Image (cartoon, rainbow, N blue to C red; front, side, top):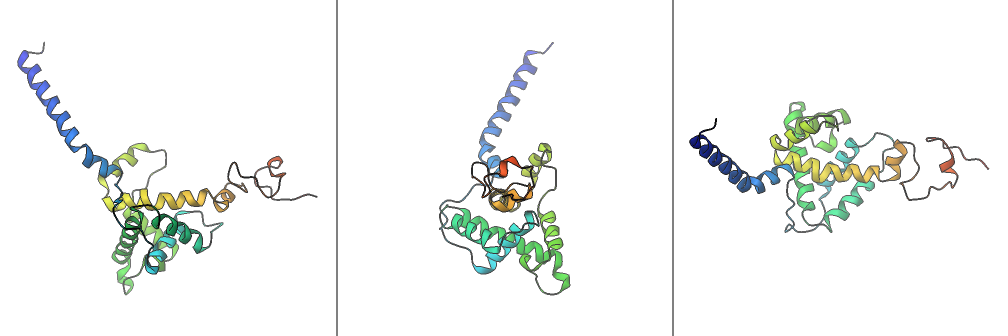
Length: 204
């Protein structure tokens, strides 16, 4: 049987834990989803920064079909020039990629930029910055949000995710899975829906 003393001590401990969690909640929220600094000015990236971001986009999407560089460049400019906080995050992401690239490959001479690395080495940089796990592994995903650095989480949430979504909502991304157009947008061939997925043939 629980004594009155034990009951009171347990109640005090639970209350203290609840109060601590309530006070810490804004800080935990910031760790899980890094907050955008919407007071940061709007604008566009410098050329060197944009090269790193375009290279990042090319690294995280399917190798074929690979869109032209302006596919990512125009999209990023549209975001950073109109949505508060994103210019800061894309600049920080470029710097994060530069620092990691130099740390990993400075022994080869000089301080290589992420954009100048071959694809295999760009993958190494991303593996050094981000946790690797299957999309269905929610446990590791949550652990990463608690253990990874703020810059690494912001890179994934505010930079990589928009680039990946941009690609897979375009004709390039839909071509990867055998579709010609995004759902709700008619394909150029009106008979496309009657063909097996991946069939590009056109009959008269």
